[in-house]
Image 1 (spheres, rainbow, N blue to C red):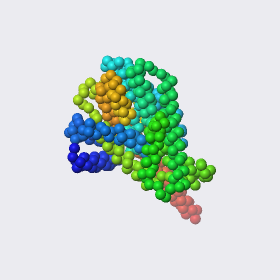
Image 2: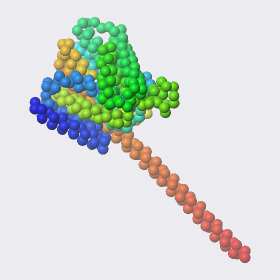
Image 3: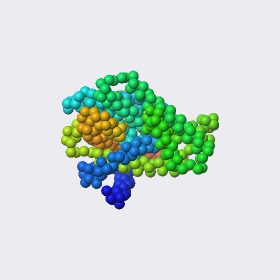
Image 4: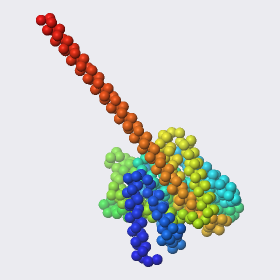
Amino acid sequence: MNVNFILLMISAIIFFGFLSEFISKKTKIPNILALILLGFFIGPYGLKYINLESISPFVPLFTTFTLIFILFDGAFSLDIKSMIKELPYSLLVTIVNFFVSSLIIAVILLFFGFSISISIMTGFMLGGISSSFVIPLLKGFDIKKNSYSLLTLESALTDILCIVFTIAMIEFIKLQSFNISNIVIRIISLFGMAGFVGISGGIIWIVLVSNFFKEHKTYMDTIAFLILIYVVTEYLHGNGALAALFFGIMLKNSKLITSFIKNEDIHFGVSVTKPSEKVFFDQITFFIKTFFFVYIGALFDISNIQALVIGTIISVSLMIVRNVSSSILINLKEQEKSLLNSVFGRGIAAAVLAQIAIEMNVPYALLIEKVVYVVIVETIVLSSIRVFITRKMEQRKEEKTFKLAEVKKNYNSSKDKSKDKSVLIDKKVKTKHRKIKNKSNK
């Protein structure tokens, strides 16, 4: 492919991403929908400007960096207090939604004639929501901290469950052996190592920046250290993406942490990230998010009718069963529950696991991969639409409440005015009566 043509495509996609984000801010319609639509039109099942085979060598690097950086940048909207507060609820929602979703998917695949093991494997593969979708979507809306924390943590935690249980099922299919204790140990290892490396790395980076090279640090230094944390965590058999989330939370709360280390008031704490650095990170997130969702759109395969039908049924079913969250979180307001139920898009983890199944020569893996891509695209589209509708309904309720408050205020104001007027008339009458009485007395 011609280099100039590739550069022209990159330029056009960036401009389109900027335009779609501008329109999204005005209309509140998630720009993710426009990016996926663009990807489909220029992809192999549209105008064929994108050849998936030619870019496949770069996809693992790009998707990995997308995942770790989106989680890292998303952590800057979290604080330690809200994270600790929402962690128990996030764990509960994660576990229930993951297993309910996995069960529904497995039942659907069994209905279409797949074996029990393949059905369960695919259920685990698509059981969790995607942080690569959830965080960019939520950052486009003004939502409460506890809802953001809950959904961000759920999306990060379900990646671990998807990875561990899917790989366990692949091993069972290949070796016909299944060990529950190994699964539990693997989950604890992934989560524990990610937390240890992410938090330790955050403390080390905060100490280095605040004491040694605060004035000489560049924005790229932080990104280099972030990548190092991911690599170290993966080398120690932890989850590198989750470590990136913990690292971001530490930097976000660096002022609180440095004040705690120095045993001083929080006002004397040192923040290791400047507002301009956060703007820089947001720009990188915009860049990788734009290309990621265009790539997701290009994956949407309409040529395989079987995969399309199965994927559509699974996507609609996942949208319906997502409402299970409402019955779990009784402490949330109705608006927060509606938002929680609206977010169910799948993403990177499922696509990567589908590739692993192909590499391991799992039966029907090629068909499963096509089903997975259909589910990823359709759940993202359906979730985006549902979030938009939810936000519109909330906006109408707020406008209605505001109008009622205005009417009540005007009514009370007019009532007060009429009362004042009647008092004034009464005073005038009394004054006139007094004058007449005085005059008659004279």
